Length: 381
View 1 (cartoon, rainbow, N blue to C red):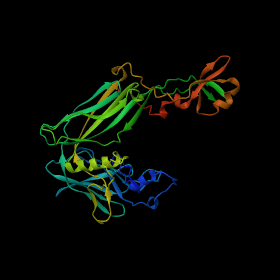
View 2: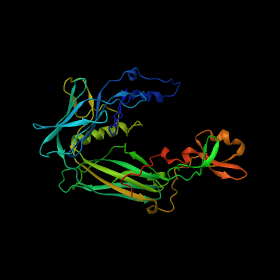
View 3: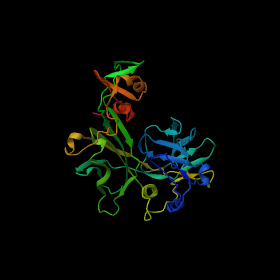
View 4: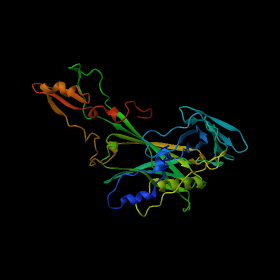
């Protein structure tokens, strides 16, 4: 059994026999023999950006029991090839990531990705047409008693798109509830010399596969496709939240690839869900037909739109979490216990309570860098 974690591919090969483990009786842990030596297949993650910079990540499949990062495929020769036309080389930096210069692909021609690995094997995707992605009309949201729903709206007046895919980046503010005034250094309290950040920013990239098609509609219009939902208690909505949505036009073949991948990775878990199946994509090994490669390389432009949602825009009655609900409540450390408590670096003094001791809490309650970054994003207002 093998797994592939080059997101957003999230290629997973599942063992149907695992259902047997759900049967009642005595169960002993079992790890199939294949896990110790899974096939070493190439994983290709990326697409050909028809109006900008193309970024391709190459890695290898690895065992599902492996706890390290996926092995990257370094020192390969990678290029974009136009059918009966020129090649555009990609440069490697960092290892396993290959990037082109900003390019504009001819929509009247077909293109593919060509790869020569360090061991001399050649891989190539199929030649695919270039699709122009229509602009995102809007990213909207609705708030109800149950929470927040974020939707995307778009259309193509020429009816040439019909197959759509999205991904997104989320960013939100993190504000600690407690501010230390002291620090404990060399068994002595002193005023805090370097204050903890008063605000940090969390960030997460999408991992779900979001698709829709308009082939059954009279017009090529996507209206209020639900992209992300949050309960009314979500800590991400406590202050200011932002989402950057990216939209991609797909060919029918690539749409089917992502649709099957979605079924294999998300819609499993009950007897009525589709059975997993092997998905490879449109990348082939030219020097060895028996050698598999994972991934689908399409060619299209990217459209994107960012929105901000502030707490003041949301219902006042929402009980939004602070994000610090599970923090250790501040407690008083008596003078006699000071050394034993604050020599442990995760215990943080807040301030002195004259005649009693020091009010203390845990590091996670005051240092928001443990939950995000203190570097303000360039796009943040």
